Length: 200
Image (tube, rainbow, N blue to C red; front, side, top):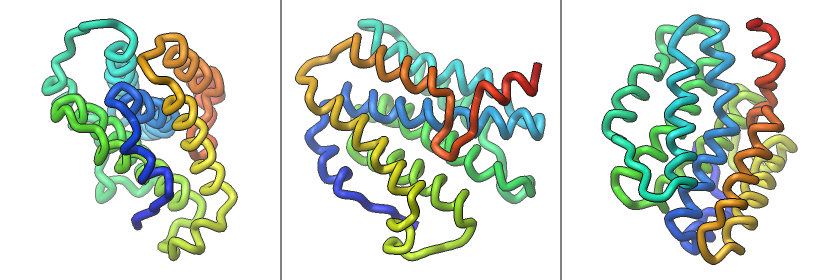
């Protein structure tokens, strides 16, 4: 299912730091989905996902920080669940969260961001659509779903804040990170704070 949106044409306007920030923002919004899957199944380790995600934020906020992205990719591969071996539907949002994170790591390794930014945007919307509907729908049908429209709106809002900023702005990046982490709600409505209370 390919979910295209006019925002994808606009991604060409983004500089690398803007694209990377956009991608990490979407990964931050998908993190609770992976956390929930680990909590419910005992598979994987949400702490490792969190660590990789924090390293990606650090590359945006700390000048000349050194990260071995090949090593991070190896660690990430061990976190990806198999849809064939797990019947819990939450496995799909968890897989999508891992795919999204791997796209950012691959963007760092390749130095190219456009295709990876589009891929993460599509993955996040696909997660929303498939969680709500659970079956294939036409693109026109999906566009009518309020939750899908809300996901596009959030992506547009992040994009607008970034595209208007002509040079790396640490306050903007920190603000986006703080806002998403404080909300603690994933793209499919998983509340991270509630999950942590359940765990404790």
